[in-house]
Length: 122
Figure 1 (cartoon, rainbow, N blue to C red):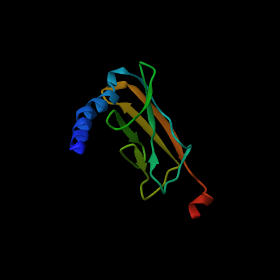
Figure 2 (cartoon, rainbow, N blue to C red; figure 1 turned 30 degrees about the horizontal axis):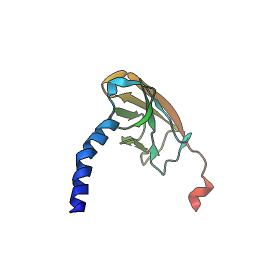
Figure 3 (cartoon, helix red, strand yellow; figure 1 turned 180 degrees about the vertical axis):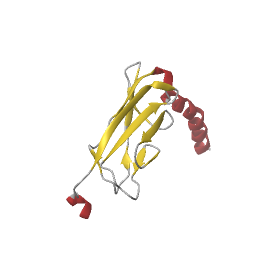
Figure 4 (cartoon, rainbow, N blue to C red; figure 1 turned 90 degrees about the horizontal axis):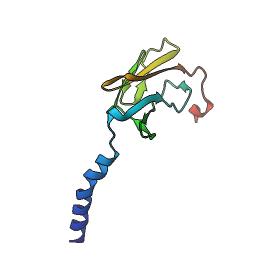
């Protein structure tokens, strides 16, 4: 019976805690790329980290529920970019827009890694 009480307790408070962490897109002040690396290894998916600064000063990571991603090469799936099979380009231009807020956007260009990384052969 204690397990049932604990489950009911968690279910009662979980929706409130999830709601407390969601933010209103209207309170976004700016969005920007905060990439983990300066070049793309085409053998791996490239994660596009975008952060949002809110009017209360908090900075949080954003995803496709708040953003629309675009790339001039390859394809986007979620927050990740995947290279095409044929690579005949040296760089990729990424653009991100906040949904419903066209004034909030950012773009960046990331170059493809030219030389093999010795760690790739391990």
